[in-house]
Length: 260
View 1: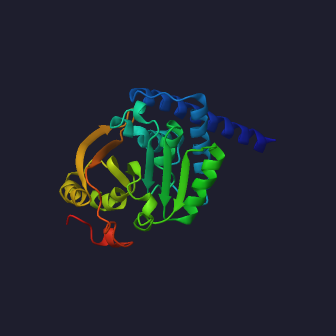
View 2: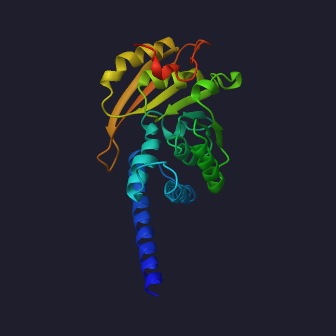
View 3: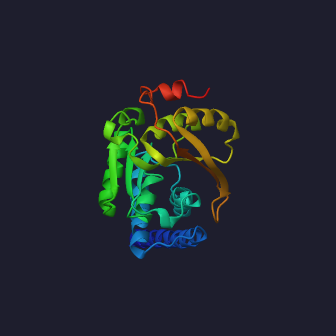
């Protein structure tokens, strides 16, 4: 009987913490000029619950506490609205390169159901998690592919197809640019989610971006509302077509980055 009582108490505490995280998330989003429906909030809740459940047997994230996940994963993913207003996320196509556990692509897909989101990751286990999560959430605007970015960009129908390419992957700007720019249509954007300190990356990053047909359009740095977490977003506009020789073969962009 005591075990059942303790389990109930634990469950109640977890539900309370999740509710607090959700309420905080709603307030944080309002600072970005965003509101979500009860259905969308329920999808984020299910996403969180599945993430921490699967994370017990698979290394998806080191962040598992309710408030932290909602702020440093969900809110952070949606911080792109600092560059592209929510009203503009209609009938857009977005590709997320090196999506990992689905960030930033899945939160964008939940928040903007009229946007088509493609998730690309090189690890089969993560892809399986993403497929199961998308099915669990009933998302019909998400497409998932198991591939390295360098190989996926060789598929002719995927090149210069997307309005926006995003990546929160851990790599320097010049490397991310070679992974992402080939997917962006002329006039579209590549947006890199970077840490606060990016100055040392910018010179090489700008050179790489220019080689790939783009130009750094905006760089914004800010603190995520209600947190001590600093984020920098780099927005690159695609002005010219990317040469067919990019990206180079798998592994080369990281080993021999452009612009160095």
